[in-house]
Structure formats: structure tokens, C-alpha cells
Image 1 (cartoon, rainbow, N blue to C red):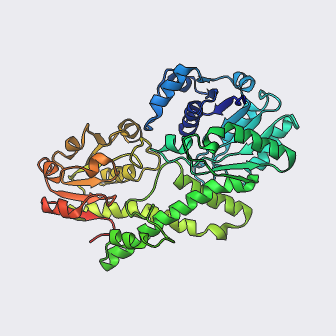
Image 2: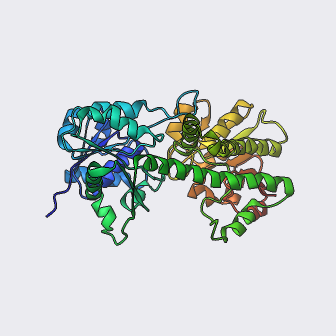
Image 3: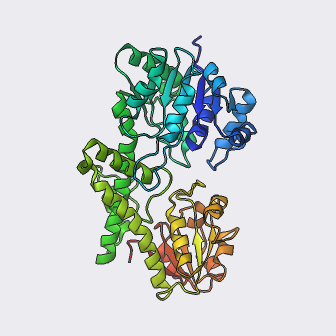
Length: 447
């Protein structure tokens, strides 16, 4: 019987906690580490500090099985693990586009002195190209040939992270050349054996690359996705100028197999902790490498995305007569996307706060992101349901595409508002139904 490697996960934020839980679910012994004792205590008690469907149940199951536990000790992690996954954050630097590598560097520096000889250190954080090469020389290299390094980028979608970890659409292994790279690849294949073999009947393809390519895969994927979203939102701007309907345009384009319909959905645009900061960091790194012109188009991708937020505010203002002064505005949604409580760079929350600053009384409801929103924007009003938020409202803004908002009965909602005005920031509601119920319906990119 093959002995499975023991795994550690450094950093128990969104990526790290999900990776630790899911690898334990795949049958590995896993030890997670975080420098915050309160986070470790919560996870060890079976509490996930963020919303992700399916993750709390798997956390409790694998804690009970004994395959999973958490610690604050690098010494314990070093003695335990054969393969160490570094999953700490790379936020955008304050006042800059570049990624802040403080947490990645600190994690490697703390881990390297305690890692057992022969173990593999695996970066999963989204980092600028050149990071793995630098770490291999500056930090891991301090141990000579005792440790190996690899890069294994993550491709998680918030709201689907469990599925994406247990059944990913691909695995990318970035390794060094020669025999050390071959050994690193072998250890990674052992660490992902259940996924690669497809024990559930769906084998996962593996792409083995050099360090540079592995680091580029994640940011290139995010840049392409952001470009596709911003393209259809640019078409929404053109539709508004010509009287076209961007939803019909998108539908027609989607039948072209070269284009496809995924993420070709116009609306308020993207946000969250990955796409905005990753495309900005990509541009910054391109500038450092002297190839900034190659990614200059991403500046407009970013600008288009931010313009959608301003246009949403303009549409709402137009519908209430040209001014938010004294108006009551109901905002449905705070998270940057449904099935998440993540408010980082949330278009919905940015719009809500901007409208409040223009003199409106904003009442907001979100199924999961209320606590996070209150911390960031305590000046907004918060309610316990969509109906409560809409009471007495002069206008309703649909800003996060939760299922419960898509299924709202316009007649029922119409009974509690002061005026039946709605702006659909996600193009997810049926305008015919809402207009038949007496609502003035507006949406981005539609007549």
C-alpha cells in the first residue's frame, strides 16, 4: 500500500482553509497553520470564518475523523509535513498597482528553518512572475539541496470552492529543471493522486511547466476573464447609446463557438479579492519587466469595469428625478457575487455608499454579507430581509444576483415601496414581468 504524504497548509484564509479541508476530505492527514490564534481556535472548533457552501460540514467531518487539525506553530508544521502548501494573501499595495509580497515572504522565511530535509514547499498564492525564482534563491536556497520548491496556482471560484478543489478542471505544477524538478513533480502527483486519478470517475489533466509559466497561468486566466466581462459591459455602453439590448446581443454572440456564452453577461461588473487586484498587479509586473505595452489594454478593462458602477448610480438618479436628496433607496446585495460574504472591492457596496454620500437614506440587505458590510460601512442602514429594506423606498437597486432576489415577486415588493422604481444592476430580472406589475424598470445596456 502506498503511503500518502502528510500535508500542511500555511495560511487559513479563504484559499488555505478550503485547501486544508478538501485535502483532508480526499484522505490525507493535514495540519493547517495560521499566525492568528483566534482563527486557529475557530477552525479547530469547527467554525469557518467566512461563507462558502459545503465547507463547514466538511470541516467538522474531517476534524472528527482526526485527519485534520490546526496550529500556530511552525515547528510543529515543519516536523509534521512532507508537502507544505503556502496559501497566504497577496493584496494590492496601498497606493500602488503592485502585489504586496509581505505575507508570502514571511511565510517562507518562517517555514524554511523548520521544514524537514527532503520536504517540498509549494506556493499556491497568486504572485508576480519571478517570485518562485527569487524565493528559490533567497529563502529556500538557504537550506542548500535539502528542500525543493514548486508552484501550484489555485483557480477557485467563490461559491464553488469545494467543487473546484475536489474536482478541478486542471492542475498546474511549476517545477525547476533536472532531477530536483522531477522529484518535486512526483511529490505533487502523490499529493494530488485522488484528484489526478479521478476516483469519482473524472480524471484531472496535469500541466507541468517551469516556474515562470506556472506563475503566469493564474494572472493570465484572470486577465482573460476580466477582459471578457469588460468587453460585454463596453457593448452595454454602446447599446445604451444606440437603443440596443445587450442581453440579446450577448445571446446572439454566445452561439458563436469561438466566443461562447460564459461570463458574457453584462451588468455591474466584477469585484472581489482576485480579479481587480490581480489584473492591476499583472500590469505593474509587466511594467517592471519592460513589457507594459503588452498589457496596456488592461487599463481600459479596469476602467470599463469601474464605469459600470458610475453608470448604475446615474441610472438610479435619473429614475428618481435627478437627485438623491431626501430619497430612500433600497439596495439588494452587498457581496461582490452571490454565494459569498466577500465584500472586497464589491460593486454593490461601492454603489450603495456613493448614493448615501449623495444624500439618500440607503437601506441594504444581503443574505450573507451583512456583518462584513456593517464593519466597512456603518453609516448605511441594514435590514433583515429584502421586504424590510424596501419599505417606503423611492427606488430599489438589484446589485448582487442572489437566487432569492431573482425570484422576488414584484407584486409583493410593490406593496411595501413608496414608488415602484427598480434598476436591475445584474440584468437578471424579467423586465416584462416587472413592468406588468407596474414597475418602472431600468437596467444596464437595455432600453
